[in-house]
Length: 447
Ligand SMILES: Cc1ncc(COP(=O)(O)O)c(C=O)c1O
Image (tube, rainbow, N blue to C red; front, side, top):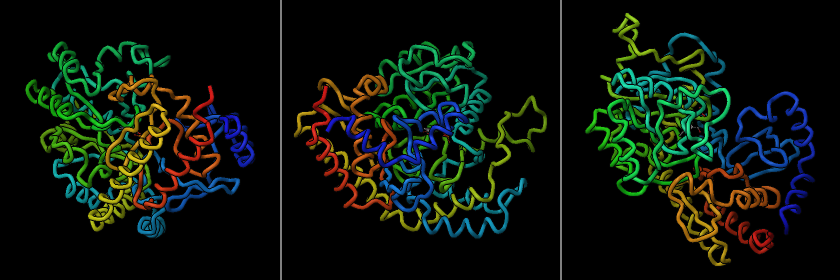
């Protein structure tokens, strides 16, 4: 089948979504409220989700591998979370003052991640990373922030640099050029060149902020020694090492990527999973560092780092969903993590074999429960965001559309997939046989 045939099939089964998209396009720029949620010809509109399935307004069902931006490790609307939420909603949704469940969630996070000696809750990951780098500047009195090329830390203005390819070109209107002057970017997985860059800026370098596995930029795990090398440089030069664990926290392991890769970040950020499907961001660190933001001990504003939280920070609904999720993870971690990592590996190995048997050059990257296919023109590896950006994205879009249109499986086109606890071995087998079917249909042969 050709791409056009898959597109027609998609359009035939999503008439109501098409009409909703045309209304959306009159309301929201691009018809969406998050740039990556648009895909061609238009996204399907969901009106319910349960377990591993999304259901759209036309009644189609999709096995979901996007899982709410990888946040839903227990699947959609798990009973433990929805029953806790039903109770909480009856007791109020936003108190606007402190609540007991935030204390319980904070303590639960500390048990999993003892380096979170103190933390501040906010409502998005974008805020958490913004606060983390502000704390680093406050602590060091320096201005420059180092991040990875392609590294995604959310939409906060400070870190909105070298996010989209071509990375050397400015991110676009609305960002003041001067802001970029205080952000330097490193080639992920290339320790030698990263250290060279760091060496030239170390006198004014406040922090290195990095995702342990590049997520939005293409599902790239770190090569051995890379993150450790950055951390070592940071410690040696009194630069703060910040790990952005918004995706990897509670996904790679219950204790996060720091424990998987043996890292000791000065600060780290969490989000996604620990909100149990509701909006959250968390900035975590040592007592010493976090107390820079303490408004009680530091009543004078000159002495205090101004980090906030916001109207919806630590709201009881998010706190309850997060706590129910972490309780479940704590009780079942022995079955959850081995299962999702094994299924992730099964997907990576199975997909690699199908494409290699069909002589379609591609690399399947990932680690633990996350994976992504990259179509390449030669035998080069995928080690950084530039490798991903210069791979054949068109083929990947077509593959993801074929899965959606013909096989009822959803990957947000071009984005990495995530296995959740609700997926079974049979789902991965279905994904592999759907992929085989798409290969056999000749989609990848068209020019
Ligand atoms: C690594 C990382 N950091 C930060 C963010 C931003 O989080 P949010 O979308 O909650 O603002 C994301 C979002 O995908 C992310 O992947």
